[in-house]
Image (cartoon, rainbow, N blue to C red):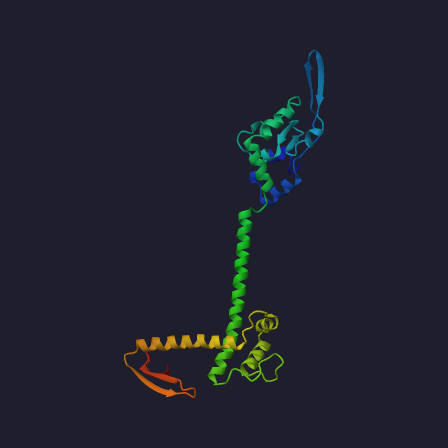
Length: 276
C-alpha cells in the first residue's frame, strides 16, 4: 500500500505519523490511480455515459483518487482533517456530472485554503524562525569577534606592562616597518606574535587598528594610569591613617610641577607609599 494513498491515510492519519514520513508523503504528492467510474444520465430524451478521464487530475493539483471506493478526495484536507470537509475526506466524491462545480466550491472554502497553506509550508522554516536563527548567528559571530579583539588587546597591554615593570622605554628612534631597531615595545610585540597565531594574523592583516602606534601606546598608558589611581584612592579611603607629602619643582620649560606622595596603612597593616 502506498504511503500517500487515500486508504493508507485513512488507516493511519497524517497527523499521527513521524515527521520524516510526513515529509515523504508531501514529496510523493496525491495518489492518482485510474478509477473505474462510469455513470449514465439523461437529458432531453438522450442518454449520456460519463467515464473517468485522467484529465480530471490535471486541472487540480490537490485532487486525489481512491481505487477502492472509486471516488475523489482532497489531498490537503485529508492530511490535516479539518472540520467541514467530510465529503472530501471520508466519503469521497464520485459524481462525474457535477465534479467540476463541486471542485470549484470546495477549493474556495476557508478550510481548504487553510489546509493547502499548511501543506505548502509544512517542513519549511517560518520567516520568524529564519530571522531568529540569523540573529543568533550574528550574535555568535559578534561575540567571537569581541573575544578575539580582547585577546589581541590583552597581549598588547601585556607588552606595555612588561616594559613598565622593567622601566624600559617603549619607543625607539625609528618604528617603521623596515626599521632594524624599532624599539623594545615593537620588538616585544613581534616576539609575542611569533608565539601567538591570533596576534600574528592580526598584525599581518589589520588595516584600521593594529595597536602598535604611539597614539595607542599613550592611550593604553593613560588607561592603566587611571586604573592604578583608582586603586590607590580606594586603598587610601579604607585606611585609618593617611599622610600626604607635597613636593614642588620647576622643569626646564619653567612649568611648575607638583608631586603628591600618599602614605597609609593598607588592609594587611603594611605601610604603603604611593606617588600620586
